[in-house]
Length: 233
Image (cartoon, rainbow, N blue to C red; front, side):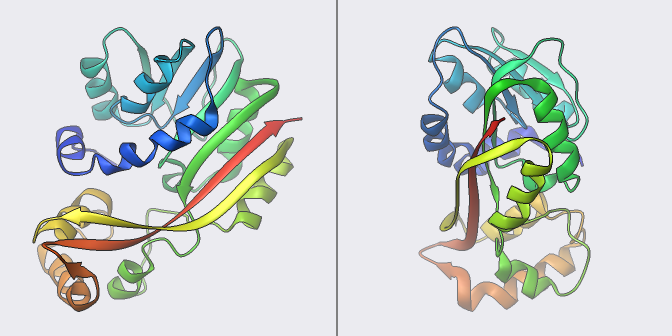
């Protein structure tokens, strides 16, 4: 998938703004080595680095990595596949915000993260969870989607198969406001363009959802998030 990194930062900054509380759960400190998996345009990578650790940001999108390097030239960023990456040295923690629901090969993610972590290292992540944007999926109708939205049990089972012990897991609602009359169409173009590539298809979804989701000059999307802290046993 090709990303418009400029548009992402201009219209969808709430993605990384919501992730700031996840950095607090990561609790990074100096002298650690931390990997930010699915780092996007680098804002949370930089926030982690502010606490003093050595940080590497990885993302599968060359466009996002180029933008991250422009935004934060002092930090290290590389293009990599979250389901199949290798690192030369092991990390104390792997962090990921709003990325893993794009990776359908969850076993590949868990195996790659396990290889990247030291024993006792922590994997702290948030992703779309079961029921995420269900209104959009219902309005679009039956079709292949680019995401997975797992339950706690589904993703915990994957992690446990690869040697992780799940210490914390929560599935929760996070209604998310997208500004503007064209906010939902813009969201669909950015995040669901592969399943709704035509203007006509997006317009049908927008008009179906307008009575339910449009309010106060914007759209309230029914986000549900899965947060997990797991430790490599």
